Image (tube, rainbow, N blue to C red; front, side, top):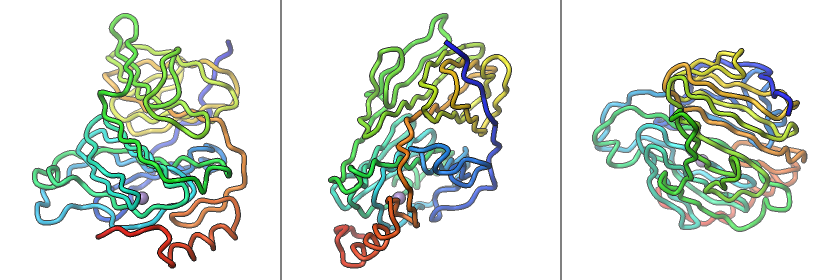
Length: 293
Ligand code: MN
């Protein structure tokens, strides 16, 4: 098996706020070279690096009711907790280590907030939100919601007590992940102890990257990836190693590109401009359901 090399390491961009509760660094699609096409099917990646929010007991911070159509939103909580409600009846609170996989597909309204409990106490908040594109044939399918508690995520121990791999989606060395996906995707949290090393074998044509959430790592024994940085892999070779230079958490993303035309505008991601206009029209005509503020 040949080595999959790091193509580039990206530092986080200046953060911006989504609503008043999500302070994020955008990597996709505004990172250097990380267009929607380059990381297809991962078309958006907002990373909320660890940040302290003071208590806000009278009003939970977050983003009010807004629509989505044509893709999935995947939220991974690392610190603090997020509450979500959508117009198809999906909802819940995710906390450290949990994942929320919402398939907007034909359209939902949703709102995303710090949980009531977190708002009372305040504290460190850290999360990732990904948008995963859907193949054209699934864009208008029925919305769906997968609440994935950390306990449901398979954890594959590494040798020499080096830590473990959480398989969120896809599979790792024959162990199947917790989430179901519409196109082939592997998504892991590697939770490694200092000196721990994990090996990954992923198809060369899959778009692959990793984000260092905690600690720092060396990839293939030659490429240092510091905290809060994203490493993009070349679409060549299958195999790479990640070694922890300190206790770390690394999010690994790998997906088969869907390779269809992308027409994106605000909260809608479709294949044609006509479908975007249709989404706006349907939204204005109340076809995304109802959800209270
Ligand atoms: Mn949203």
